[in-house]
Image (tube, rainbow, N blue to C red; front, side, top):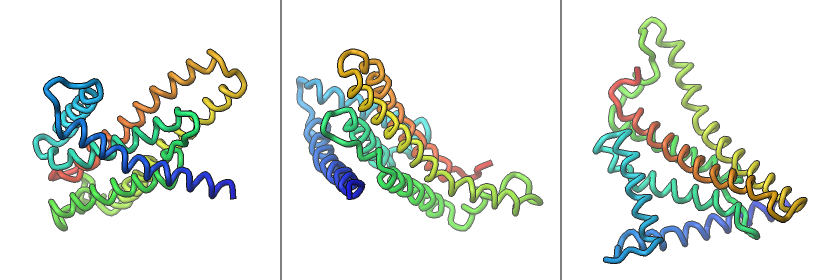
Amino acid sequence: MEEQGLYMHHVWMAILALIVVPYLFKKFAKKPSLIPTPAQNLFEMYIEFTDNMVKEQMGKEGRKFFHLVAAIGLFVFVGNLMGMIPGLESYTANINTTLGLALIVFIIYNWVGIKRHGIKYLKHFMGPIPAAAPVFFIIEILSHLSRPVTLALRLFANMTGGELITIVLILLVPFLVPLPVMVIHLIAVFLQTYVFMILTTVYIAGALVEEAH
């Protein structure tokens, strides 16, 4: 029962993020003012950062995937950050959330590859040696299937571990001692967001190229 309650709490936190984040993005990114506010500056920095990321990985074609990468990044970041706010729970510390995000990325990049190359997309799984193609095919298929699992587990484990350590230290020593751990947790919030975003762009870029090897 307690586990179900925690799960529902994560669901409500995710719904809250899905409402608040688009509103903030529209407010500060879509209608810039002549005198930027600190919030607007942050959103503009994020837009520029994401734009540079997709262009570096995919060239100008990456602009088509800007909204996807930017939306995933914001959703992951807000979820990660919630775990540092007393009374809130990080929905990215729930394996259902992280696995769902990872599966979205998995489906999209394979769909992009099939749409771009058609049946030739299978060449991405055949390896560089025609004679060894059956072996490479099995290895590549397993490798691709492991991507959503590792992507989900990495984010889930880091956010869950960071939350637990921070909570335990605050309960044991509620003054200045937990601060270094909270700083490390904050670094992990940014780092895990970046990892999820960059891997999303790398997977899509790999599906777009003519040959994987």
